[in-house]
Image (cartoon, rainbow, N blue to C red; front, side, top):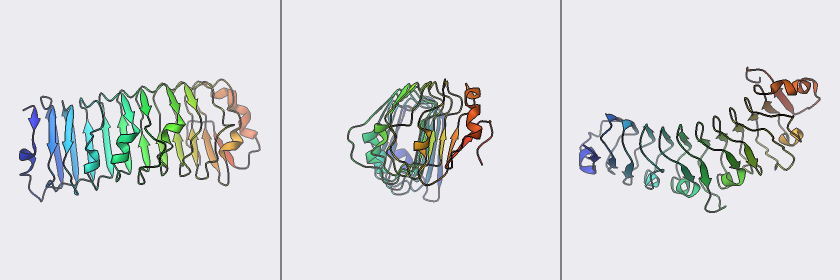
Length: 260
């Protein structure tokens, strides 16, 4: 069966809270009906390249992996109670911020182990009032323009680990941002001199990059709270002098273990 229409899932009993579709490599199309009462859906090891969601007020969690999807479903916004959406091992190459505008209820979005090389913004207008965490680890990103994330004004956690990022442009302006994760990339230089104040910032993790010198203007990272900067790995021996630096609001992690 290469297509599952709404008439198939329409008969799922109302008592079913978790729906799993597994090991159906021939399945290419999936249509989720509005009457589905399950709160969680897992779609695993299918060949899905298109999925349509009718307006639904039950689904809270949707996890898809692996699949042939080349973009986020346009009908994701029809899931009015969706809080957690994860897609991995997909064929998605471009992430469009305008697609996130439609998914107004999503709190945590993960598009990981995919092929994303570009993130495109349609408008600087604020959106995604509930989006707390965006995880794009293990993709193919080579550069990041932080202005791309400006509309996500409630974003607290941004994970860009395990890409091939070499260049960072601009600075985050998300006042709610607490954790910025840039581990396991190819960053050779980073300067915080032009960065905007980030009053909620707790941690910047640069572990396992290719930094050849100490990041300049580190003091700009800290406003009123202590900020942890992780520099372990890569050329971390370049930063041993930071251990004794008198920075009242900065704490440097130069070992594998997390900051305390």
